[in-house]
Amino acid sequence: QERTLALIKPDGIPYMGKIIEAICCSGLIIKQLRMCKLSRGQAKDFYKAHMDKPFFEELANHMSSGPCVAMELVAEDAIAKWRLLLGPTSTEVARMKAPSSIRANFGTDSTRNAVHGADSYDSARREAHFFFADRMFA
Ligand code: ATP
Image 1 (cartoon, protein in one colour):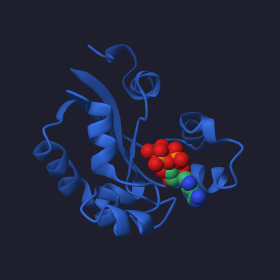
Image 2 (spheres, rainbow, N blue to C red):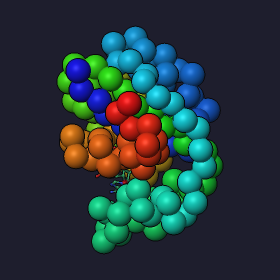
Image 3 (cartoon, rainbow, N blue to C red):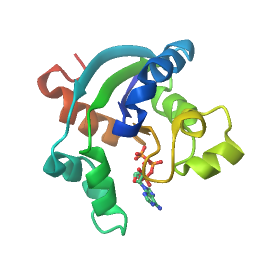
């Protein structure tokens, strides 16, 4: 069984019921769940790998604009399973290439794309620690 970190971004919060339903229907198990509002500094820290990107400020503003829901998900191949379910980064691309994905259904544009998913074992560990600290991988 593998674990990953999923995040419903502020723009996805109005659809959190449907997003959680999609997670549960796909065989991913929600091990931990927490709703919280990130400060701008915390949002920058979470996405620090992108600090040199032109969209970094916009991303930090969006991620701190309202509450997020963080979830630790468990399943066989959880990282790949969740990345597949969420779809491509750009909502427009998601609508063309993965019309049943969460981003195709609930995203708005490239920044406001409803959800996030860790892309590797190392980022899953770091991000689970970010939101769940000592209860990580309990
Ligand atoms: P995430 O890491 O959130 O799951 P991702 O791995 O699909 O998304 P990344 O390339 O890691 O995409 O980008 C992180 C986030 O930065 C994206 O989810 C999106 O909110 C924002 N972003 C990425 N590319 C762009 C872009 N070209 N323009 C605006 N925002 C972007």
